[in-house]
Image 1 (cartoon, rainbow, N blue to C red):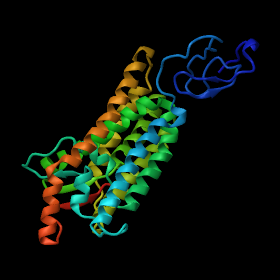
Image 2 (image 1 turned 45 degrees about the horizontal axis):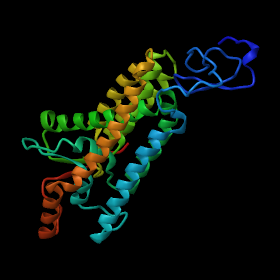
Image 3 (image 1 turned 135 degrees about the horizontal axis):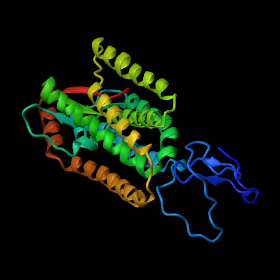
Image 4 (image 1 turned 120 degrees about the horizontal axis):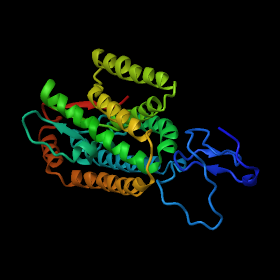
Length: 308
């Protein structure tokens, strides 16, 4: 960091790369080291990634998730189920949960829609709280557009890893849902970013990831409490997020900013489309019909709580 000319005093500068606020006498960003250029008085606003300081992507993703959860609660109430009681499998499937049946076809859009479905109030609250905590560091660093892309990609990668595990490695019928694969993706995003920037704080973040995945996830599954943590989705989200974080931390090219903005819009539209497809799917109607005839949960379906 070096001091600039005194002629630029009196106006704070925002870094075009990471969005950090810098003093008017700085010529390099205090956070990422990028050169700072004072904008011309009458210059048009620069075209670039959406400003991450407003947490626009995080707010939009939380809003979609909350909207889906309210829908789940209303559907459960209509069937006489309480807010804190276990809900029917048809409820989860109706709003987009992923059903994996080895040897049978599945609906690919559920790899994305399942990110926005939760299996109870605690599940929803924990994931959204953790997302908010991590996003406060991640989104301002990379911008809202790239954050939205990373959230969608890591969420899909997490459930793809989960489906692959339950089909190829440990074949079993599983009903799974939750945002924590994408939340771990945000953690991986920060980890990859810090490692690429050679920031020593990556070590503390890596220890946190190991704690939540190994000590929390595997220990809970081994305790036979009835709650199954989807470790495959967590690991898949974390690794894909770390890869994206390392890519984002590299040299940026402004000519790709428009592509990032368009990609974020496509990602959000894909989220909405996947949720709409889940509503039109015959799978949840078949499960609801079976539940109505038997008064029991569909046989052979294991509900796996994908939470941290």
